[in-house]
Length: 149
Ligand SMILES: Nc1nc2c(c(=O)[nH]1)N=C([C@H](O)[C@H](O)COP(=O)(O)OP(=O)(O)OP(=O)(O)O)CN2
Ligand SMILES: [Zn+2]
Image: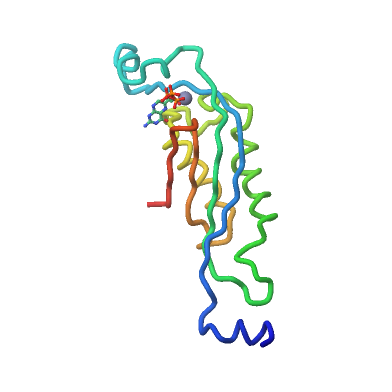
């Protein structure tokens, strides 16, 4: 049996997810402009430290789509790497998230909101319908997953 016979034996192109991981380091402070100083301290505790704190984040981006029968790819992972550098490394790496990224001027820099920020940046650039999931690990124990809902 030849390769083309194998491809032809499946009626529809197969749907698959592929992922790429990227690390970035950033500092932040959990603080809401909608709360008083006391409420911020009570809700965010040590993470409300006025001088902030840092994390070595890991972002895992998953795209989902049909395997192109000619290239064998959903998309070229080297292209995904480029998109992730533009959408994650450039805005966030070695930055103070709250002060350096305008999106977070009035948005609390939780791992939830950082994950949504990355999703929105990628959604602006990736070919339509490909982005499936963004997962961000803030620490070894804490992470968020967003699928655009
Ligand atoms: N829902 C959320 N809760 C918290 C977030 C967040 O982004 N979303 N973030 C923090 C802090 O910024 C900090 O990142 C986490 O603190 P902590 O849980 O203490 O971090 P560790 O996992 O490293 O803690 P260990 O002490 O190692 O268990 C807090 N909450
Ligand atoms: Zn933190």
